[in-house]
Amino acid sequence: MQVKFDFTLSRQYSSVEKTIFRLVLNGVINTLEIRKLLWILSDEVIAEAIRKLVNRQILKVDLSAGIMRLSDPIGAIIQKCSSDVYELEIPEELAPDDNTVIHIQGRSTQQLNTAILEALLPNVNLEFLNNTIDFYISKVGDNCGR
Image (cartoon, rainbow, N blue to C red; front, side, top):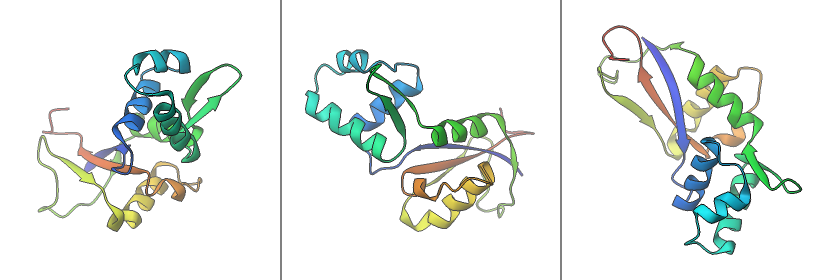
């Protein structure tokens, strides 16, 4: 079966961290602009969320310019997820039907996450992202409505 992969930040991330990631993902890269959009939160909460995302290599920050960007590994994963289709053998009882997506999450899926990361970027060691992102597998091709 032909599938595409997608990912989300794992459950270990707070809603603030996920919001900041989503803002950067959608082109809001200026730290002052993000601060204005998240005006209800304290500077300390926002700074701690950004620190965690940078330390986990999800985002990178240019302090002199005051901008954030997706890290190179995350950018490469996004590129591969959006452009490539993979052939995957899934047992019939686990295979997604027309509108179903398989969500791969949790600590027990580290080997599967490693395999997906290796399939996406075979010559790059991305094991450090194992506990950072959760993958989704969705069926593409005939009779899947995509």
